[in-house]
Length: 381
Image 1 (tube, rainbow, N blue to C red):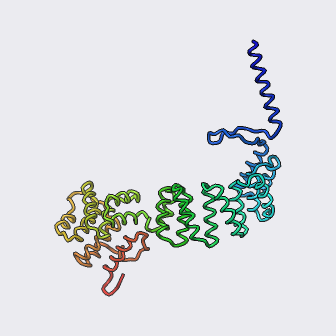
Image 2 (spheres, one colour):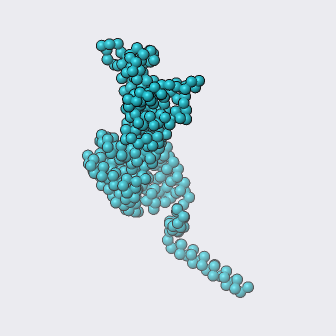
Image 3 (cartoon, rainbow, N blue to C red):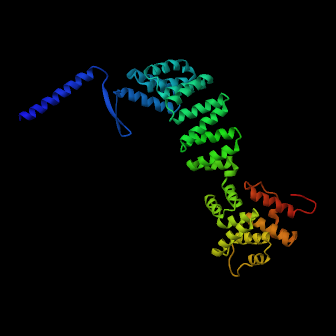
């Protein structure tokens, strides 16, 4: 019993001592951040509430309300460098309140001059006010304070470009993606800078890395970098003679297997066209597109026996209509082998009348060639 009383007395004394110590200064609390217990200042619920509502108002573009709420947060927690920084940034973004931004930033700096978001906010504020030189100084300080912060590096690079120091901006972004190759924002900034500089080589390199890390941007990249359009990559693999790579690219482009053979034939690659066409026909003898690709491949190689075999479709086998590119290739083949009238009879009127240009260069080239073939004597495409 006496032991219990002794333990209780120790606990009571300890609590009393802690209370006395706490009364000597600001109370502290332990917060768990990313699983790590961290000692910090006590922040009142009122300050939290004002700050959270201010951040929400700022996110919705209601800057006057955000400023009012941030000011309320400072009244309940005047020692928060984050609140003063957010107040300065919101004030700077509102022309009528911009004059008071400097005071908020100064208060934040007095609390913690090493706070990287403060330097970044000052850089943005100076840039928005047209003071690019000042903005560069603040952005450089932000990078020095936290080199691992992508936003600071990206802001610094954008300001270097704005100041006309494009080579420095390129080096800054190159360093970022080398150090942090998984940074989507870093690759995006490098890609967009290369586009603005009409640097096709760097744009393609950055686009390849960006597409791998951010598939959602694939459609945009395909539209802006023709070499990375899905069909262009198929054709590039075919031109390199790598049928396996072409098949993988075709799957990514959702290109049917027969059409891969057709594209190889259209590119004048008889060996690849034959290999792919025979593979398809072995599984599906009804594929007219693959049969046409095989015929064109035989014609290109001068293999009359294979040409005759390709044109000899199995009896009583339903066939699938050829693709537009396959029809064009067969029309061209007929023109060379049987003459213009035979080609015109197969093509019909659809290929004679002009169509809107195709986004597929290979299809458009074949279409122009066939129009020239079918045009009356003395007329071009």
